[in-house]
Length: 88
Image 1: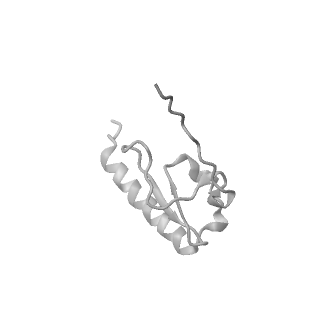
Image 2 (image 1 turned 90 degrees about the vertical axis):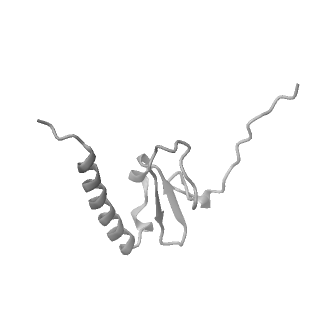
Image 3 (image 1 turned 180 degrees about the horizontal axis):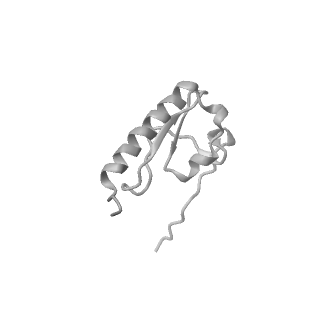
């Protein structure tokens, strides 16, 4: 029997933003977890599934990107309002 070992690849520091991996066209492991792709000022894209958002270096965001994020937040707030039961 041959034992299979999990090999972890080491990524260069230039591929990380505050400890997060910059990737395009990637999705989280769990299909039920929503994620966002955020274009960065250096032309790369950050794919994140939520909790890491607080660690983003805001210097990497274009003003246009920030405006699009504001618009998305508004639309997501409306969407959540439609599916969240109102307390009685």
